Amino acid sequence: MSSQIPEPPPTEAHQKAENASLGELLGDVTRDLSTLMRQEVELAKAEAKQSATKAGKGAGMLGGAGVAGHFVLVFLSLALMFALGALMPL
Image (cartoon, rainbow, N blue to C red):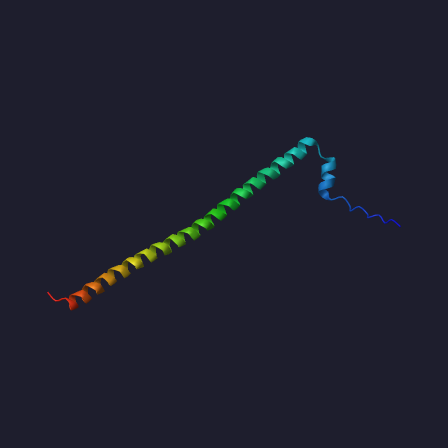
């Protein structure tokens, strides 16, 4: 008992490919490749912009942490100076 699977009806692309000349088909391929490359470049630009934004935020936070660390060192030095001044009078 063999059952045959019916073929799906031809799509618009199949019908166009059967009726189109080689030049038209190559033109379609060239146009599609051009569109694909353009879309890939746009995607790469968007991803680079997003990465640059994240990197900029990270650099800003790192700079802020450096400034805060510098203030901590200054205030600890001042506290040590006043503590030593109180313990060792001139």
